[in-house]
Image 1 (tube, rainbow, N blue to C red):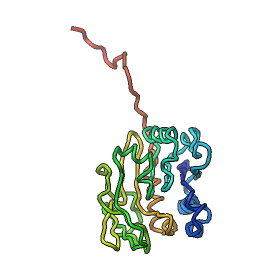
Image 2: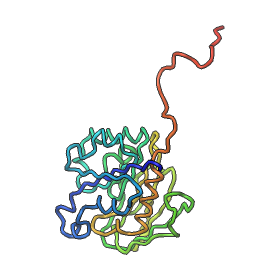
Image 3: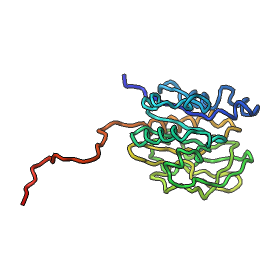
Image 4: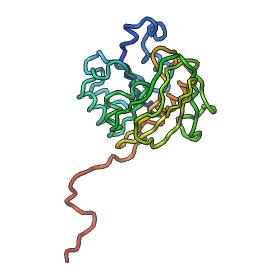
Length: 243
């Protein structure tokens, strides 16, 4: 039997504790809804902001193949040492999936090198997420688009580097569009930014969103190969003829 991909779902887990509407949608936390959507294909752990080291210990991260990150109101409370720890693991090959307002997280901004700013509006409007790279594995099993009845709007310009691969674009009922499925490589790690998931709406119960997240985990997981070595190489592979 193939070894299961080890996934850690990190959730700020603040809105669910303080906002009754959010608690009614995600009574066990958004991280548990995301875990439920991933199913039993993966080996899943969860971590939250208020745990020691935000739950992201060196031991856990070293065992994690793919880290899923959701944050919103407490980006600045994330310890810089933990951010650096996650950053180094991405460079070493750990996959990273950044969800929704995680675009403003310290780790995403560090990896992107830009402000990651955008336009937004919370009006509970329809979002239609269009597939623009139909052969990409992240959208396997997805038709031309998926539609969410209510979501927060994100609009361009989205201040990110040009994606290595643009997989999804969102259109909103109010007229805006947004690059909502962006893929990057940093070091040996793969990064997938996936836009939908405001805490005020039941987005993480949507079948299409769940399919994309499962596909995203498979895509982002490290496929192996020899890790490169760096530094001085005093012994050459072939004799060097000295003139």
